[in-house]
Image (cartoon, rainbow, N blue to C red; front, side):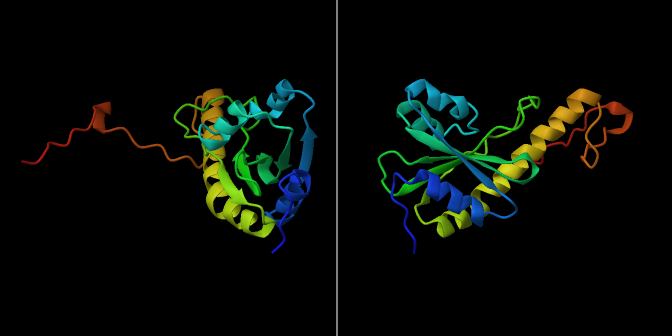
Length: 170
């Protein structure tokens, strides 16, 4: 099992990207000052652990993984847990702004072993992320055209457009 030093974020991110399904690239960013960490961090699509880490700790660096279909992941060292990392989705293209009723896919903590981390990201994070991306894209298409995106299921209205009422059983 290959362990990367906790400070080897760049190497870990590149190894993780190489093991994710599809084609992913890794882009490492150094931060000379605290405000620089927010250039990418403000796009983190997470209201949990990763959001907490970004807002409460000074991050010396981060990595952005770019994958198929516009997917982007944010990778940082896990504060207070040497040898572990946090991986979170990044919000999609800023032109897609219809996030109403879309749950954040949130990030996950992963071990310092890129193979195990990739398995966790593939199994736990990417399906939630893809579902959220699809929902945002559908919402954006519907808002632009006034029609649901092709392939979107829309329930039929009740006869006469009256609301359906199902009496409660006693």
